[in-house]
Amino acid sequence: MVFQYTDALVTIATINFDNLVSFYTNLLEQKPTTLLPNVYAEFQLSGLRLGIFQPKNTHQTEFETTAKSKISLCLEVSNLEIAIAHLTNLGYPPPGEISVASHGREIYAYDPDGNRLILHQGIGD
Image (cartoon, rainbow, N blue to C red; front, side, top):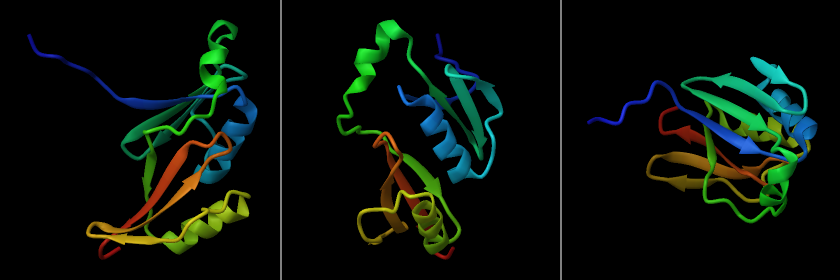
């Protein structure tokens, strides 16, 4: 028996639904492809769907604590400086400096709920 799947998406839970949907609408410069107010929003990215949902009242306490997550949303960008300026204009400047790795340059940033974003520019881009 082989495990089969048809698609993949990443979801982010938030109790600040409108604020987070607004942030990603502005960051990604697109409206959600699916929007159920105060319930679920979904963005179609290149090769990935990003969902944002508001947990039901019975599950909200599970998501109230903003402990550091081990998962990051990594966005490959063509120009890291422009991406940093865009985040800064949205009011969420990356707190650190650009780091250089063998695979390119990157910087960590955070969305309004504290979820880590990695903006990455590959070598030769």
